[in-house]
Length: 119
Image 1 (cartoon, rainbow, N blue to C red):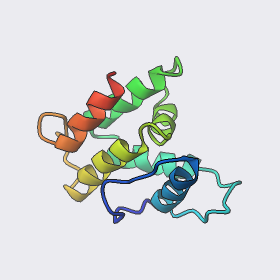
Image 2 (cartoon, rainbow, N blue to C red):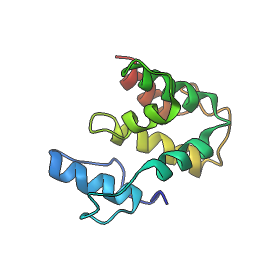
Image 3 (cartoon, rainbow, N blue to C red):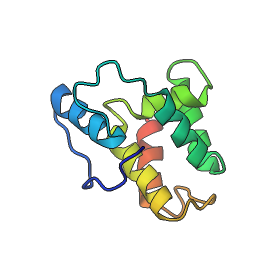
């Protein structure tokens, strides 16, 4: 569902290349204008539900939209301004064995995500 093997860092410089990257991340055809990302966001939540760092990051991001909904937060972290740093943290978490203690204290990727959403 989520492509964990893209070259890091994810790079995009405009809407077109961002769209290409988001399609790469979620294995969506570029003509997938009608694609529903809900299942992808649920998958991310299910993979991170036992990781307080991510659950907090999702709630912080959701707060940008005056919400505490975790799926809203995931959606926001997949937006243009946050996708690259969120993807790196997510990949580090998954490839690191889904350690529930994953945090900014033991991961440079988590620290970068926290710094980005704390601005």
